[in-house]
Length: 156
Length: 170
Image 1 (cartoon, each protein chain N blue to C red):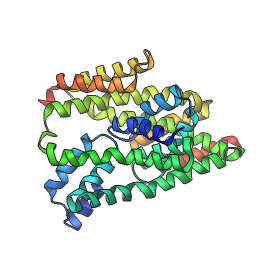
Image 2 (cartoon, rainbow over the protein chains, first blue to last red):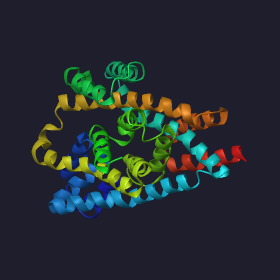
Image 3 (cartoon, helix red, strand yellow):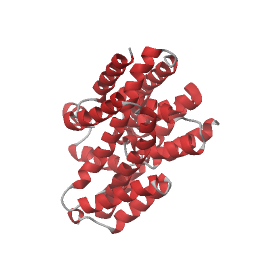
């Protein structure tokens, strides 16, 4: 999204800085993938529904085709010993990537004034899922509810 | 599996997430644990494919769709990733001024933290499948610290871990 700011706001002047800021903020609170929401809104501001559709297709279809090719490669090489050794290495790395993803979600919330709420909700979600098998949807819903009533001091 | 049902299950996961891999717990719960149409190993491979390709991290769902339903499944996965993006348009039209309200920001912050817990919870069974020796454990720990400290693109982790896996497997 930062790269698109340079292209859409600075180079081409298609969006004002205020429009970019509003779209950026809303993309972060829209369910799903932030980049796709950002693209939909930018396209909508420029060309309404046609622009939104074209933008979302443009940022989804080419990489999705690459994902399919990579997945097809995984299936095709499934019986090759050397390929599976290499894939085994990448699957191990995937667990590290997932832990990184969790850390990137958690780290911004560990600021002064927010760390206690973050720690309580993180541990509660982990325990509810791992220990008690509560469904992810229920955990996310309860967390949103907690956030409505438990404001960290820096939010006030 | 019926493609409409697959779309609805993947859509449920994308609509209830707010970025990248936060849809992973819902996907795993529905497709691995409840319906048994996907294995932990395939889900792990889907994450690798999604993170290796350029574009948004959430595109691993395309790979999930491909594992379950081939190319039509991948198309359904792409559709499920794209659909929630259009929710921003009514938000842009009617709720723009309210996005900065503290209670909305606070609720989203709490959802992100809970999602972090859920991602860790989903990683545990995937790790049981993928981490089967000291080398794979070292790759996982090394990948985590490499990405957190250097913030380099994940493609370097994928390439490096593949080379290490290849060298160890010879």
